[in-house]
Amino acid sequence: MINPYDDTYFMKKALQEAEEAFDKGEIPVGAVIVIKDRIIARAHNLTELLNDVTAHAEMQAITAAANFLGGKYLKDCTLYVTLEPCQMCAGALYWSQISKIVYGARDEDRGCIALNTKLHPKTKMEGGVLAEEASALLKRFFVEKRNLN
Amino acid sequence: MINPYDDTYFMKKALQEAEEAFDKGEIPVGAVIVIKDRIIARAHNLTELLNDVTAHAEMQAITAAANFLGGKYLKDCTLYVTLEPCQMCAGALYWSQISKIVYGARDEDRGCIALNTKLHPKTKMEGGVLAEEASALLKRFFVEKRNLN
Image 1 (cartoon, rainbow over the protein chains, first blue to last red):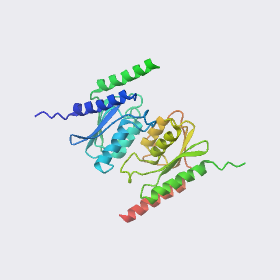
Image 2: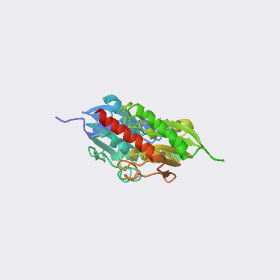
Image 3: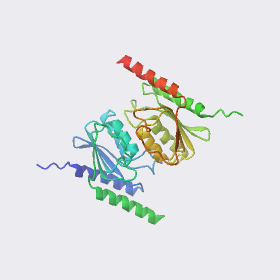
Image 4: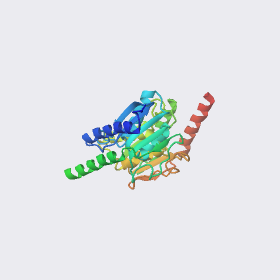
């Protein structure tokens, strides 16, 4: 039997979150956290609406997932996020000891790979899932923003 | 005239926050954010109470200061924090474009200096203000914790 709950399935859910951010005028990044094929947290970037640089999708998802689990460590959890985490989010993921991070598009300038942010030894990271879709949404956001100004 | 509002004055306020964390059974780290000699945010570590790895003193202080200012950038602000910021907090401070970070004790293992977290070009960082007091409080916490277990 085919398992419909693969990385693409969950990244699509994260992309839906990114689209919600887009519709609110936020840089479109979305995230979901999954345990045993079940989504326990969904979030999208809200830095503009909340006037808060810490309101990245991943940060909110980490808080929500810990709240759901009743514990601060995200053991056996996977984060799906449409854009490679930044230093702040990768640093938060370090403390969470999350099992796996799957990102969509690379962030060559401010992502945790280029900036060499330390991940927890228990955490694996993979990228490139629906990267083109995530990247296209970001590009569309910045083009529209430029045209408005 | 002597200005009573020096780094030691504000770090003492951050240490009071750290003591509040200590009394709650939290790793004792405290922070305040100051603009023009006025404290606009106070916070202490609440990771245990909130079951949330993102609830470091600095993160809460950044959110509170932005809320006070009505904008997400902490221009002309100084963060006083009793322990050198971690990757997550330094990453959040990067996004905030805060003008200055003053920390107390060094964190040789998990601090942003050892882990080479990138700060914003607009941000200056200094350390060692009331470092012994901050460090003594942390040591007392871990000794008492060990004795309880």
